Each structure stands twice: as C-alpha cells, then as structure tokens.
Image 1: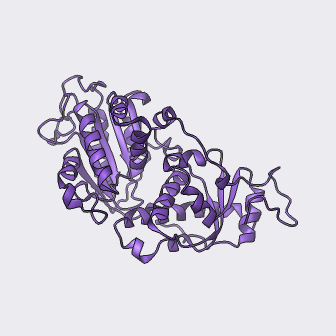
Image 2: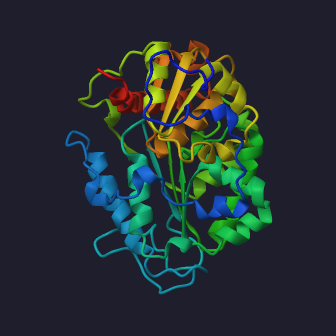
Length: 374
C-alpha cells in the first residue's frame, strides 16, 4: 500500500500524506557519527537513582553500587589516562576501578561488562554511568556495538583510535560479535584505547568469553576473544524483562485500514508496507538508520510478514534498536511481532538479537495503541 494513497472519507490532521521511510536515503557525515555518540533520547534523563531494582534480584542493587564507584573512580583520570593516583574507595577490595593510572592495574581489567537478559535495565545503567562520570560530554562516548563499527568504517581505524583515545570513558551498548572480521577489529581497537587510558563499559546478553559463539568458528579466533574478555570484569544482572513486568500483553495487530487511517491522522507519521521497507533497508547502510527516523513521530506498517532471511533480519534488528532509542511508536497490521523470526533464527547464533528486537518492537507497539481511534 503506498503511503501517498488517500483514504476514502478520511479527514487527516496532517496537511499532507504520511511520510515514507522508503523514500528517504539520508546522508550522515562522519562528524555527526562522532557527535551523536551520546546516550539516546530515551535515556537522556536516566540516573542511578531513577533505576528501580527488583527487590527479588539483589544483583540489580549490587550493580548500581558497583557502577557508582566505577564512575567516581574516573574522577581523577585525565584524557591521557594520567591523572591523580588513586585507589578504590575505602572498604573495597576489588581495586579494578583504579583509573588514576595510565594502564590497567595488574589486579584487574580496566572495564566493566554488564551481562544479563533482555529488559533488566542494562542500557539504563550504562547511560547512568555515562551521566555520572565526572567529565565533559566531549570526553565520553556512548554507542551501540554496531555504531562503533560503523564509526570505524566512516573514519578508518587509525582516525577512530585518535578520535576516541582522548576520551575518559567509552560505553558500548549491545556488544555482539557477528563475524571474525569484527572480532579482530574490535579487539585491536579496544586494546589501543585501553593503552591510551580509556576506561570501558559494555552491555550484552553474552559473557565476554562467549562472544561469537554459534555464529562463526569462534575457536579459530580464541586469542582475540580472550583478549577482549581481559579488558572487562563481568557484572551479572539478573531479572525478568521489565517491559513485560506487570504490563498487559502486546496489542494484536490492527487492520490495514486502521493503520492507514492512523498514519493520515498523525502528524509526522510514516506509512510503508513492511516488505517494501525491508527491501529499502538493504539499500541504506545501517549507520544511517538513525537518520532515517529523523523527524518521524510514529512508524505505521502494513502487511507485516515473516522476515525472509538472516541478513534482512539483522538489518531489522538495527532499525528496531534505533526506533526504540528514539521512543518512536510502531503501529502495524499483519503478523504480530513475536512471529517475525523463524524458529531456526530464534534457535541460532543470533537468537539474542532477535529476542531483543521482539521485546523492543512489542514495547513500541504498546506505545502506539493511542494512535488508533477508539
């Protein structure tokens, strides 16, 4: 269904037809990629004291305490890594957050790795760490793993090292290794940054030593994977997906007519049929998916169908992440989002990415309920 097709009898609030994501091919300059390495809008105002730990999951409370000390431990570090010489706060025996030295102390790695399931608040905590670290925003970087590899693609390896080595902290959300090339690239990049004195923090659903497992011949790249693991101290965060905690089930898909009417009645909404959008994503680099949603206030999709292949599925995961970061509701007809991916995909090496996408799209579908006239 074309987004420019009028709906009989519709009196839209918007003066023009809905936008079409398929008609957009944004260009993103490299300097924008660097400038936008900050927590996404959804996490602008999060702080440690706005994180609500599940009382039945003590690891969540412990994580807040550990990360708070992590942030304060960065207070004496300069961009070069040479700052006041310090130690962990009194009473602590860990010592792994002594960030006053140029390189990581022998007692432990110079980073923390938040490991846990979907929706336990890892990104909330990572963004809170970014906000709590006593440094100017220009000395802190926050981005997803995909955005980090895209930055290397845009700037080149050496320029990326130069750009980020002056930072006090690099936060990497959704740390995943999808192929051997990424393994070697990220291992080399993080090693160079740690040598330059940059502290690291990352989130993932996979422990550092298990990265890449089930996706490629991880054993062939064991040295690189172990090198990555050595940069981080794992911090486990247990709990259930807060997006489903005490919330109603995701709304069932709407009809094509309901979705189209809502798109015409919502200023700033986009309207595309799902198969066409998937085709378009193949022509736009994933580093531009965020820019693709600039000025979009709601995404309306008709004819949602199962994703046909793994490459398409991985692109959809990136788009889902960008939509979720920007809190853009998604209204859809066709299949419910929990049927997007085949059983083979959900049982394969990328299953954690697909479950995250389902979780996030479901949350955005809930947010879209108000777009449909009752």
